[in-house]
Amino acid sequence: PDISQVYNVSDFDTISSKILSKGTYSYYRTGAEDEITLKENELAFKRIYFKPRILNSVNDVNIKTEILGSSTDVPFYITAFAGANLENNLEGELPLAAAASKANVIQMIPCLSIIPIPKLSEANPLDKWIQIYVRSSIEESLELIRIAEETGTIKTVFFTVDVAQLGRRETESRVKNNSQFSKPGPISSDLNWDHIKFLKNQTKLKVVLKGVQTYEDVIKAIEAGVDGVVISNHGGRQLDTARSPIEILAEVSPRLKSENLFEKIEILIDGGVRRGSDIVKALALGAKGVGIGRPFLYALQSYGEVGASKVIEIFKNEVELTLRLLGVNDLKQLNENYLSLIDLVGN
Ligand code: FNR
Image 1 (spheres, rainbow, N blue to C red):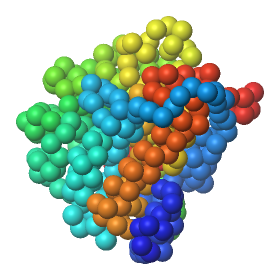
Image 2 (cartoon, protein in one colour):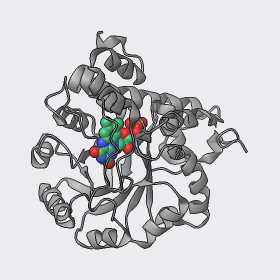
Image 3 (cartoon, rainbow, N blue to C red):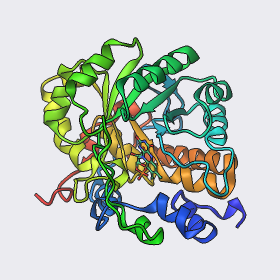
Image 4 (cartoon, helix red, strand yellow):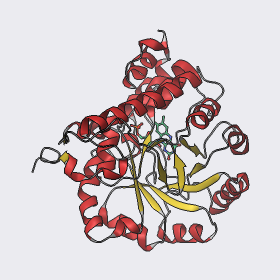
């Protein structure tokens, strides 16, 4: 369909389900096991209700911000995912780089990108981030860090810490007729806090852990000296029945606030974000930025760069609309008083 028929980012999912092969679509869509976490990631946002304020002059709404020291026009970013090059998008991450640089959106480049990191960096001169799986050896990770440093525009390294073994993604496996369990990776299953402290000492880039799911591990991350954490369950693809990131954030946030720990570490989240209102809820609970995964993948596959730009435009418009209707004209004004959390965890 013509892209003017796209009303919201979930429409790209519907379109992808029709135009992609079953194999490609199932790889993108799949969660782990019974896909409880996959569904919960989206649903948990809908159990938070708004408490809008009135009569606040909201003609000018500012959604520009800074995440991990990088300025951006929007409070969300393109998170890292492998497989951007499948089927309909043989230019891999390049259309994302183009869309991100035109709209001043931060792009996280996956270590599994199909396009070499220096080439992606040239295509997008803005501040960017890199995501690294510590997989076969520490040396391999150090080499990637060096490549990232040399670009000059990659400012932060995200170590993904939730893949000690690949989750069992049955939806995808059934389509591909593969009932084997994955094997634990050599270093990824051995990865521990000492590796992170070591890697942190090897670079001047900021370091963030992607895949943190408890208050206790946020505290350990602060102790390890990292600059941020992404509260994430890998889009429901790893440990099924893990909690949604927004529920974890709602639990962690008041504790960090009361101990002044938001000054020590930046909190980001990703998983299940499909509406601007989801983004606003995360920011109101103290997140500095919100990662978007599948909507960009589906849009890339359906419409290439134009699709990626449309995802950005839709989220941007929805965030601005939500703020106006909340009676807020700057992201800085957001706080938990704009939210009702009563239904979130059923207390
Ligand atoms: C991912 N994700 C991911 N994460 C990561 O750190 N490295 C990677 O290579 C990938 N690859 C990947 C592939 C696909 C197809 C998906 C859907 C996801 C996880 C990703 O960064 C992010 O955590 C989730 O996608 C966020 O959830 P949503 O926005 O997809 O619901």
